[in-house]
Image 1 (cartoon, rainbow, N blue to C red):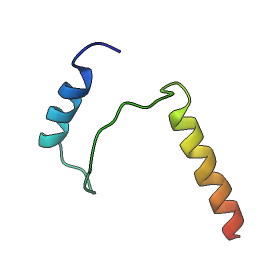
Image 2 (image 1 turned 90 degrees about the vertical axis):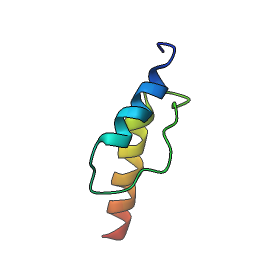
Image 3 (image 1 turned 120 degrees about the vertical axis):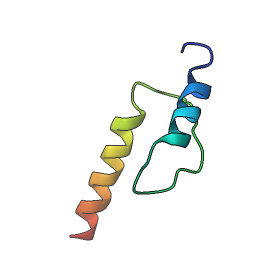
Length: 50
């Protein structure tokens, strides 16, 4: 990761408007699979509710 990238993202997020609040910005331990893993957990949870 480029040094200082997280700091730039944090600053930009302070001025951006979202429909929800953001607590913290962290660098993922496994950035290549983190989003996919989160989507998978969400899909599994949705199927269990059926």
